[in-house]
Length: 351
Image (cartoon, rainbow, N blue to C red; front, side, top):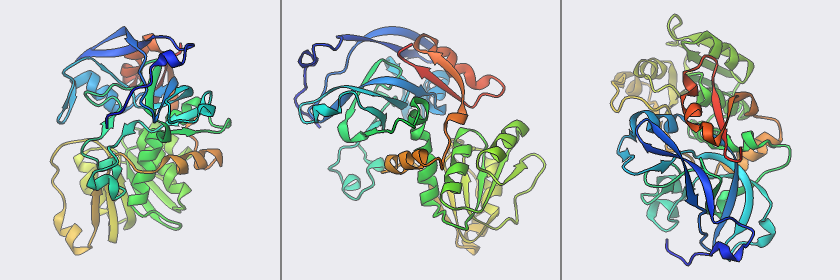
């Protein structure tokens, strides 16, 4: 994936450096001045407008690693982003400068077996924002391939455009769960991904959307924004629901086991939430009902659909934003999930 760089001297209005919030090591953030990214011919330079804080960002901050991905060197976090194109590589139409965009924060190789099969999310050489050693978007500028910077209409806010990334997780989960008109769906976890999955399922035509959590305020919020039924996981049983699809957005082993038992014959189970590496499963239930079980690893080709759903008012992402922070408050944004009532923190690198 090597190619000649486009010096930003070709764009004399561009600064040579930018501000960024950097994870120096586990639990330690700092403000830094970094070079503005240089462009490959097929890339665009995006001036970042808004960045959603993801649970993975928080996990890297708190623990310094996720599985095999370890923060061994300073890392810029953030992969849920929107912005405006400030400069383009030599192979990109300069008319795109000034365009508002939502960014799909990954760079597949486009030539491996998985990419050629259309499963570019499984590319073994994927470069994904804010995944060591690739820097993310807690910065004033980022570079991305031009076809992964999607134009957004004026009706879509910077915040909603940034949150197309987690919406893509929900859409991909619903696609793999084969949610369709008339489907009955169970979702475990009424956090941001669970609520997004509920909205996605509703947009796909599901008529019953059950959601579970242990927090009554989150359950009430989910009922207002996508779910049709709310169940407290501490007191209410889901077994016997016989839903067509179960999407786990909690990562809790108990929720995974009980959710699988709520799936009817030939139903589908989709594991989204990050939890324990190993979970005991009700194998006899899976076998006897021929339940199809799959994990979810990011997404593929979801941005166009997500943008259309937002533009049509079928999904509302602005309602998820509960905290707004400047770049110099990035560490506070990473801690905001501990505050009552918080769903999604957003960082604004221009502030």
